[in-house]
Amino acid sequence: MSDRFQRIRPPGDEHERLTCTECGFIAYENPKIIAGAVVEVEGGVLLCRRAIEPRAGFWTLPAGYMELGETVEEAAAREAWEEAQARIQPEGILAIYSIARIGQVQVLFRARLAEPGWAAGPESLEVRVFAWEDIPWEEIAFPSARWALHEWHRTRGQPLGVPAMNPPEDPRGMRPLPNAGL
Image 1 (cartoon, rainbow, N blue to C red):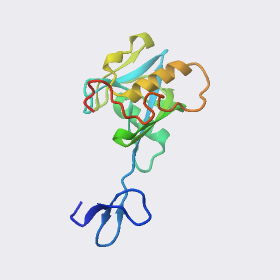
Image 2: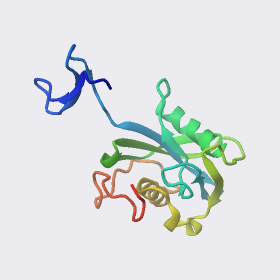
Image 3: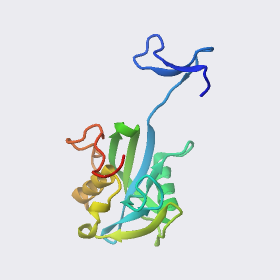
């Protein structure tokens, strides 16, 4: 931003905002929406080993930033295609997580494959289906991926109800995984 923009608290506002000192325009900074899915395949879950930072080399769910002009379901399906070359059918919202420390709201679906097949996309080193007992827990990239996997396992085979929220021990999403470098 140019020198015209300064962080000030506009009249009647409770927060400092990036504001143009010449015209008064306010550049609102809001959380980003992440869409993704826990994709069940043959009783296991589809995970992607990240090829990009943050947390390159670690496993996660297919998920990423929502784009303008798409629904959250479309974003989850697009991310599954981009990262895992998987065509998915979202079944409903599994969880909504607030990650305040990095300004994200994550909407994660429970999903199934809409057609057979998967492969590593450009942002993934590899894609695999893991049985619950084989999930590489020490290599999971993000706390929210861990939370969503546990929620999937807890609700597996049941109708979806109210989406899960942050766990009581981290209600604002402030705790990164140990050694996560986040």
